[in-house]
Image (cartoon, rainbow, N blue to C red):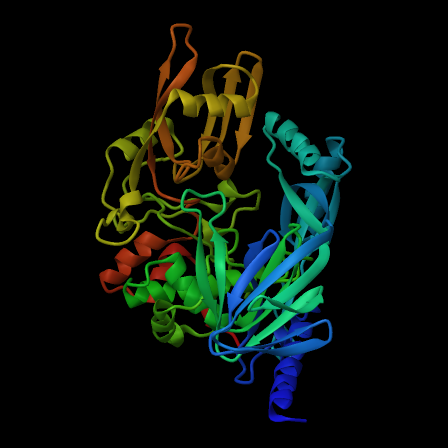
Length: 534
């Protein structure tokens, strides 16, 4: 066996030993030679083709064939879809930890009493220690299902019906099977292999071209991105080609932190972001992207990861002292340490954003040491809060995101007509039944139209309905026609994002004033415990 063959064999054997462990569901057994925890992260999705370059070179394997691609070469993968993914759409109405059996049974009985064919579904798997001998975190969830459908539109019909009754629900998408198809690898224009999966093992890094990001957001675009780790190219759950990176958790965090928060932030904010991101990734392992062939994704759905850069390398050094640090509750369960760009002056409590039980660690707090005496769930007081803003950590215009503390948006006649058409109840006469959480974010409102009324539940749905608002904490000055129907208006709002957990702008402001990462985390996650895990 020559040197190149031996080198390739060692790469592939090491790759497969890692990949098979990850895909088998025993996430915690996957680790590097230095003991770092490995994860699978989907970094890109392509409709039918993708291109990449090999950095300083890489080896590939496809359908029993293998070879090396030099650093000056360009490779292209093209695909043909043969079979679409199969999914089921479950309408869920409540959730709790899987071990909270009495609570789940109570929720189930409530819905059965209302005449629904309710049942409890358990999803996920425990996070194990790296030696596989102990459970670090049991993140399995029990969910109460009241209907299952073959299409999303049918499931949405039930969600809308429940919303009209003032009942919150959501759709859980079960991936029964991923799509299937053929892939062809060409190097410098010459076809070299065909198969269903392509494995890439770079000697250092590889560059994926035209990676699409922020789909559905105003900043949507494409960029060439560099990645360190082993990569699998295959057809995925969205009837498209997935690029899945297998790399260390700490490497991912070094890319997540400057993507989610300014890489130029003071060290306390960077370290707080690293701890929160690490805790969120590990808390959700096994409950996100089930059946899709990876643990987490690189988009807003999970956490933004833009790959390797000079900034990520610099950040890696700054967050290194926090390696293994996560947040836990008093029982030792990992905290799903979520965060949002700018809370607007007051964080939101989890139950008003998602259909979950109240979590004392994820309750909304004032983003200041001197909180005003305001009840932001009350219309008059939230109006005062929005039109007469008080100073807060996240109002600091000198840090990234401070400009989102207060904002305005005008709804033209064209904008309003789009809203009216999506509601499907004719011209809108009024908006009633407004309910707000502790931060002033709306989680319910009802539109009264010519042909009936429609209730919209949860802050993200409200933001999407109004054309992608920064947050659902807003008041409106409506314009009306002579018949009293709304034709447009001006919105005055606060913050950017759902507002639960750590306020990233506020964290930067606190760090700039000398607060350490542990002090920042204790402010935004009251009652949490900082601990280090392997």
